[in-house]
Length: 327
Length: 272
Image (cartoon, rainbow over all chains, first blue to last red):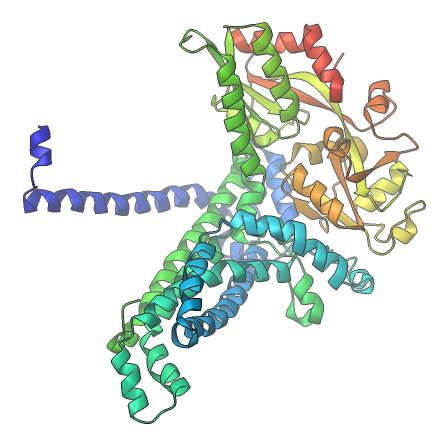
């Protein structure tokens, strides 16, 4: 028996085994979505499409779910999850846009302009940064950034001007977005650098030979060729930002307020809550049926956003494929 | 942070208590416990002592995570005992038996820089329900400007007790920031000179925050023992049905032995 395993496998057997393993992965994904979906169904069926709407205070609705306990009446399922969806979109989009700009510029610098010695140090350091666990960023946020913003940036009169609507404690949008950006930038830089490196040198040389200056060559040839990799890096970074839970739970102010751009500067300091951080904050309550179902509903929305994200990435990359290099 | 602590706590508890049990004694009965973070320091001390005075009989596996996790786990039969830091609720699963094992005080805390010594009950309610929003309206407070309310997420046992015992059943204003653990609440209060929150006396006795008295009575162990301080809540050991076997032995030991009483007396208050 052992000998049969040790001998080189015939093609058809290797094919079957590997096929079974990959089918299993697919099966696990389907089973997971089905499981989450079944548990999330009650909250969707009670609220309908207005589940996504706004209205009332989310914290009060959650407290109701918690209070009704094991035998939840239909009214306990009442939930308007817009503040969480908005918080997730806002923090993710802001962080990804910032990170994309920083990542593209720094990748160009590292690959095209930096002296070789600097590049040899920068690349491994960035790889290392990309793997720092998010809870460490959360700790730095709680111990350093939140007190700094709360005590030094927000003035007493700003606090007092909104004191009956919302609390500005320092934890809020600006700290969340700043740390998220720092978290996802290294992943993007690492991926984009690899793509830029693999653009054939002859393409650059060709452009320069045609008479454009080096900066123009970088923008028109190298960066253009790396576009699919930039899209892929953005998709990965967005996925990490979407799913970030612990760090945001620690620094976002944990209140489902929807920061409003119309508030001017205060917009930056207003607290928020995201889908993932709300799951962390309330996971203890999974035993109360209404709250449990709600937690699964948040998870389902996150799962579908992740799928939608991959699909969008694929669709954007399709027309870019003509002159691509593999990143 | 809670989760990290919980993980390491499980590892530490498993390590410490695993060593205490002799290797190869497979006839040992195991008591598994999960639940409130607030009572974890007490329960792990009690368990260590229990193993020492009853060698070769029992071993413990203790995890923390929150009062509600204790209730859920014990109701589902995942653990022998659930630790709960709040009184039984109507909404709890049926068939659970709550054994009160110790009492603790819930202290109102402010930043160290705010030397507020005491609040009346009506001032406290007005602050936490969001009616009073400025420190200038609170006599005795050395902070100025807006009051930053720091509360706990609605699943926290300490929040439930705080509302019943000290706010006459009223809810903390939804304006308050919600912290998912005692540690994060404490950190936020230490950070923010304008903040006010609430902690179990074990956490507030550690310093770093200013414990505010109620109606002239300071919040500490002595005033809680004498019964003057109003915000005294209980820790429960919870079992599914009446405690049997090793669990019943452990709970009886906590309630009646002198050694357990001595441990409880260090930071907490015995029930009787």
